[in-house]
Length: 80
Image (cartoon, rainbow, N blue to C red; front, side):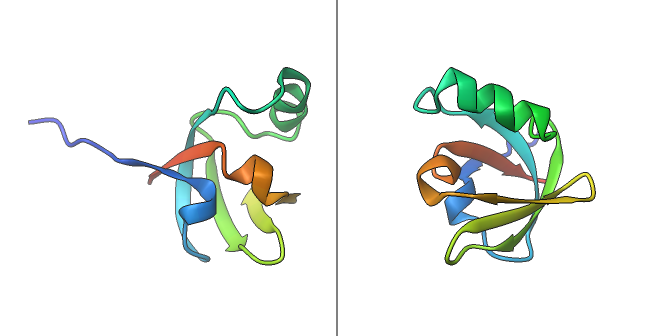
């Protein structure tokens, strides 16, 4: 039997969680999507959520990235 992993929004991920990026929502502008890819955010990259307030901050491949909540809300992740 194959285990099903539930996707959750990055903004709903508790601080300290290690997750895998699943996909970007269609709401994210294509140019912004390219910028996120350039910073290493692409599926199935593992990321660690460092904080959620005042912005979402993640650790991605030894780099901390601060994301506005309007962007982080449309990033889908899965438990690692």
